[in-house]
Image (cartoon, rainbow, N blue to C red; front, side, top):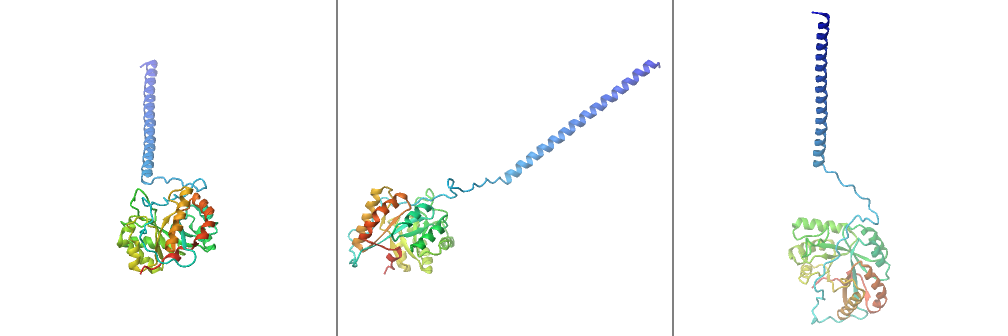
Length: 320
């Protein structure tokens, strides 16, 4: 073999080895790239699966004056049409000497702090009925006690419109077992330990259930509390239940502000006075609306010349 041929052959062998090395290198790079890709895909899938199992909790907004941390409940579902349920042919007892007595209960206290404080500024005897576990209840109760005002529990109860209308997270529902009902009632009562009595928030369905009203009134009797029926339905069985269990009891006579117009509220105040003059006493229920406060501020000086404002506890009695 000549030197030239030998050199050419060596070149071919070298070239062949180079090609083999390059091919191997390419395969190695491709394999490594595939491995990296698989690792990335596996990591993505694992992250996705973990997110599905443990969803990210939304960031809680820090409450500010512009972003309330609570939802103000619906104030009331009124009977339609609302009317005084005392029979017109009712023969009243002789009215005692002196001015007739009137109790005005301000329902739904605990959410509208500024409006509640406006009612507290009135020179009048009012009764505040406070929602259980409401955001401003303690602050309002302290100020009410400082003025010598009476506090009640405004007890949420199931209305006929439930669940379209929600009476609140602490409501007593007709679907509850006796144990559930009494447990929730006790929690609500314990939330406001300074109360003297209770009235119902909504409850047009619950107050027609005799068995459950007996259970509720049994607890109130043990605690020495009175009950004022807000009378959200003419079918209410609160009165016979109170008679059976002999707890101090009264009924609402007039809703004062279910139409939020100044002239209407004034008309309702006159109706409250009329009933008090006939029967010797009457109970009105109002709500923490600014328009109600404005009318009260204007009308109370004249009102207190015609009736004596008293706490709700002054007008309850055991039904004989």
